[in-house]
Length: 347
Image 1 (cartoon, rainbow, N blue to C red):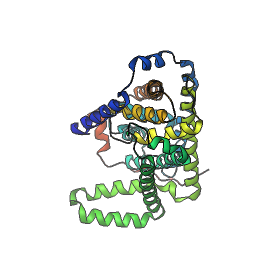
Image 2: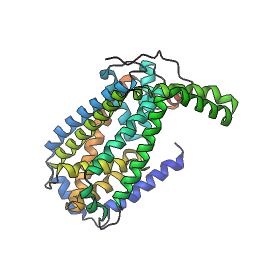
Image 3: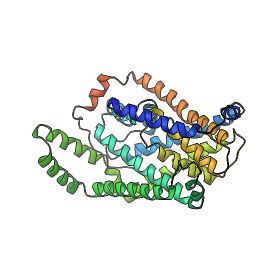
Image 4: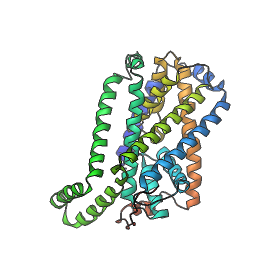
């Protein structure tokens, strides 16, 4: 990541923090945080890690056509990836877990990244589903007095179009790998310098291997089903943390918050989504009648509860792997990946 991109993310986070703090009574905010019943965080964190295990199972499922790897092996790598997303800019954790998986299991990085992109597309589809499921409540958010949130209906429609188009492209690429490889090879031969054509072609073919799980309608349904379970569990954590505070909103309102807040984290920002998360969480909750100080207090506590445990666990697993994000490790993403024997999906 270039230096200007990092500082652009910091600037965007600062702008969102300004919106989050504008007109806020800091004394009331601190009182809300100080008086919270933090015992409710424990079941919330437990549910979060159950969801993380389901994420590891989903990733194991997506990778089965490339190599069968037990979920218990995928779970620590998934935690490492989340830690990377939390402390490095530009979602570097996605590359980090692909590198760790290559070191441990020999899976090509390009194939791993294909499955990671598929995960994110399905996550986006489910989060937008959460938003559309609560369309009657969107009017409240869309006219939030600060004008910060904007017209959520239009943003949701645009987001739905983007994710639907991306999902369609990946499904077509998975269902017609030979045609996709042919078109890709033609573009490589006509658009890229000769010295990098073979390397790029090799990466493209391994990337297509990573999409193999999408060739089965049953697999697609399973990935979608597990994605729904993952985000419902995430919402359950929001529900537990809400009980640490004095306000109450419906579970459907928390589903809406979950969808909007996580979609907001796709906006470039400082590492850990600082600012974007707090501003959007506060705006949505205020639209549902929660006071600004308590809404922001909830957003900060929830953010920490989502960020800290998995970051510590991921750091532990990364230390146990004996690796660190260094120039040496980054170089592992440069060479052509070694081949892995492709296996058919089993039971």
